[in-house]
Amino acid sequence: MPLSLTDVMLLPIERPRCVRCRMRMSLANIVPRPDRSEKRTFECPKCNFIETRVVPDPIRSEEINRLADNVRPPE
Image 1 (cartoon, rainbow, N blue to C red):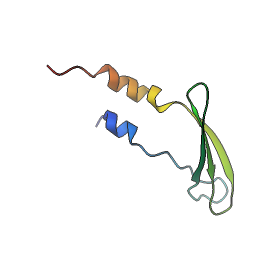
Image 2 (cartoon, rainbow, N blue to C red):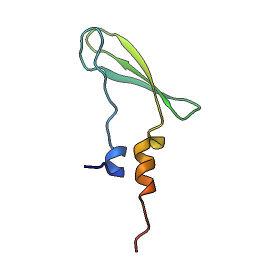
Image 3 (spheres, rainbow, N blue to C red):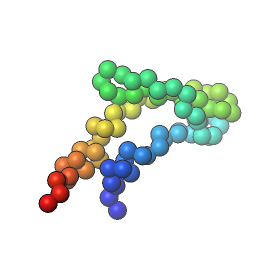
Image 4 (cartoon, rainbow, N blue to C red):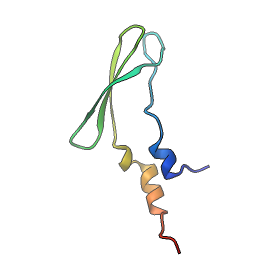
């Protein structure tokens, strides 16, 4: 089943598992970058391991572009 625009925009931020203890990490910080991507910092609540990931702008994702190409005004 294809995703709708609402589904894509309401997806939660993926919480990775800690590489040390395999527990779900908590989102600690989001920093926007000039190229419209985000630098996300995750922290493990159990062992305090910190991981940083850079993710692309969700609005410029392929899913959004595909959905936007199929949007037409009502007839």
